[in-house]
Structure formats: C-alpha cells, structure tokens
Image: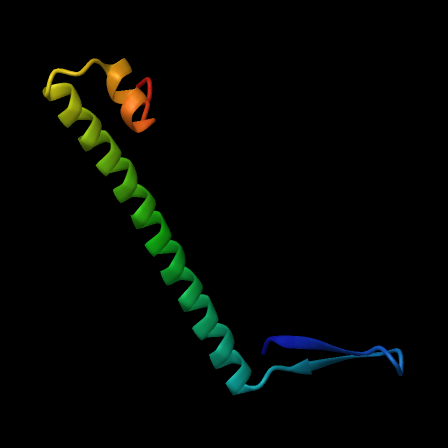
Length: 80
C-alpha cells in the first residue's frame, strides 16, 4: 500500500503511514482531473493552430500575399 510521510517540525519526528482509502480516492480524482485538463489544453492548442492555418489560407485565397497576411494577423506558417 502506498505511504505518506508525516513530519512534525516542532518535535523533529518523521513518520511513514499508509494512506487511507479516502486519500487514495482523492489522489486518483486529482490525477484524473489533471489528465482531463491537459487533454483539453492540448485540444485547444491544436484547434488554434488549425484555425490560424485555415484563416491564413483564406486570406491567400482572397489574393493577399503571405507577407500581407502575416502583417494583418501576425501568423507565419511553418517551414515544413
């Protein structure tokens, strides 16, 4: 079973204790929430990059040069 370290600074003691079921549940819930948040942030970043590339292409399709599109939006396509 996983353990936690409890330190009593005033007494200068360290005690290793098994974590409780409630603590394990909280740890698992926080880990799941973190994974969900990370996935949402990655999806948002991917969507932003996709939108930037699509918007840039639409400006180019309207007849702007890449330099003009970059001047308007600040977006510079990657050199792939």
